[in-house]
Image (cartoon, rainbow, N blue to C red; front, side, top):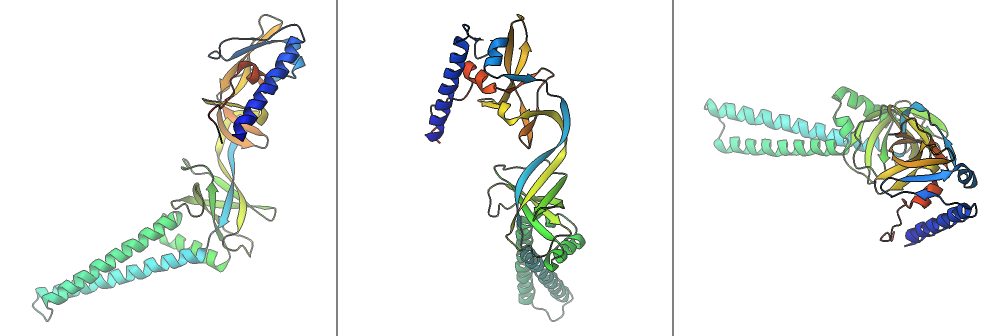
Length: 319
């Protein structure tokens, strides 16, 4: 309810402001049908409402996402791995015993049918225990489960000894990851440390978003399990245009900006809404795709939004 009232209030104020400014100048802005998303303003009207229009060059930047990272308990991972090892050893012993008794029974030695059946049942129990232990490890520690055993033990050994740190980096609000980030950095007491992205985690843990496992190979001492740190995930480099956050508007079809589409007649300029795809935030700007070389309204876009009536009025939005 508060959100709906705030949106409605902002819209009414913007409409009144724009109308008063334009009417006081003895002219009105011509807005065509909402389907075309076009608003026309004279140069004098643009100056009166503080419209700022400029071209945005194409830039190539890495996609970056700031996330929260939580230090994982490496001792728990090592205990789960030890459980897998123990279950595997029991499975091998049970398999050897079952094979031995079966061989004795085939050669007519002192091995009863009951002993063979008992050994087969023990083997089945050992196999199910081993499979369950490995499934639990894979669910809790999927990135470690995906690498070879030698590297897995080296990572856990270093983490338990305090020479390295394992972290869970959570992407809040995202249920899937897509491509894994190429690099990651973790901030510890103001120091930015490079981290290795080990892979995607399967279990949600304490959060609700998709998450990654990171490794700080040479981490500061004293990072206890459960400590929360700031991390930055970086994907490959993307080409796009940097749009100020205040120039982005949102409608039913997603994010959009206003672009200058025509200066005809000479005393008027036409602006059209253009949809964009958000790539990532960089400070107070967003890297976006979908724009051509036409100039973009980077200041005063809210006035065009009010005149066009494209903003979500949200009559049913009670959040």
